[in-house]
Length: 267
Picture (tube, helix red, strand yellow):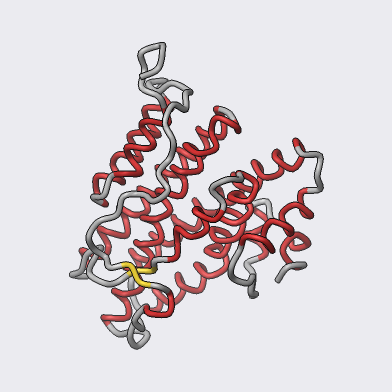
């Protein structure tokens, strides 16, 4: 509890990250963002963020190489496995945004906390929409195994806000800008109009999330008196374990503050 008798924002974030129940975590993330926006939480960082967030007993988390095939494209199993994978991405994204605010907020300031708590609330809403869609398809989150590697980027960059911003919003989230339009087309061709609208909503929000990360990264580079593109490329080469592969959604990336010149050099 802070000196002004409001709970600290870091304590609220940590408690939410440690929540294991997916529904409760999503609800708590939206509450933290709302409480912060309404001035109910103090800008105080009196607790540390957990190295690993709370996770439910299911889905079983597997290394990428052990993930089962989703099934034939267009089959019922294949469609449900796709939505399950998307739901898992959004579930982990809640903790990624919370950790960003809680781990680096003291260093970066109140606007940074506001921005990434708003991102966390968006990711929680996305997870709720995808969970509801899974239930409409006769399934649920936890019915399939899920990718265990999504938290790796957060763990690897836990010591450096510039590295975290470079890899998570500006590489991992930016990849969603590339692949989502084709997924929308495929889902719509299968007659799933409600699913297509959910993905379009998520895409619009992700453009904003990537732009938020890119703007804060540019601020860090300016503070360090470094060229933004040079710093980004050096951090991506050091901390991103994959490769940046085209095709790129250049228009969405540009709307998100990522110029072609920035990422073409490392693709």
